[in-house]
Amino acid sequence: MARNLILFPLLLLLLLLHLLFHSTSSDPDPIQDFCIPDPGPSPLLLTHLSTYPCKNPSNATATDFTFSGARSPSKPSPENGFAGLSVTPSLFPALHTLGMSFARADFEPGGVNPPHYHPRATETALVLEGKIYSGFVDSGGRLFAKVVTKGEVMVFPKAMVHFQMNVGESPAVIFGSFNGENPGVVRVPATVFGAGIKEELLEKAFGLSRKEIERLERRFGIKEVEL
Image 1 (cartoon, rainbow, N blue to C red):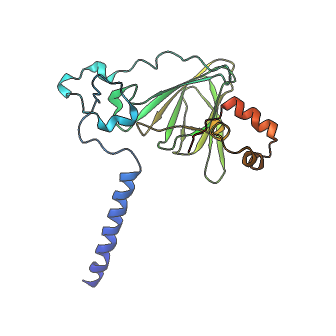
Image 2: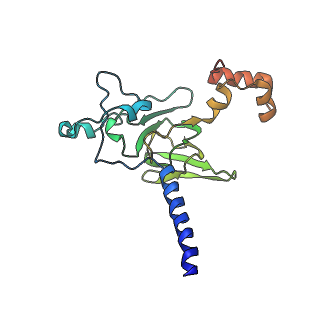
Image 3: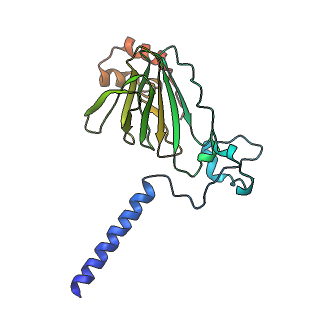
């Protein structure tokens, strides 16, 4: 009897911790089959999805659940030979409440998707065409990287800095999927050198000269916020 009195609180604590972990580790479970947000005459805003009513399910059609915007390649940037299309509920409303989103990435030969991370989702990246040097760095500074080819998939754990580069001689295409409808993206070079961090700090942190810092700031564009 005494043993059961001890075990019961422990089991209750484990259950509560389990529920807490699952309630905060991913998008919430839907309470209906689907919810296509209906903003009315206003444009659909990703940050306001929870405020929109759901479209009447009886008015939904197969067209609502079909997206063709990722069928064609985007034009890569002349700076890094890379172009990415992120498909979230703001582009494909049927994804709302389904706990996922996806992206298409196009690379010219030598094209680079610079180091970045997604603060709210894990990513799986399927190579549709080409050869991609792909990898991530964990929180201990360990690098996991290799060349992945057509038909292979690499996973990037949530909030881990990762990167991709086309090491083939022809264009490459990647299809990425995320376990969150708004994974977010933080691009490391643009965030560090384009946010307006004091140059003195950057000089000391990276061992760069003031001239080198200014060159990088011009490239990534300083975005200062008045406080």
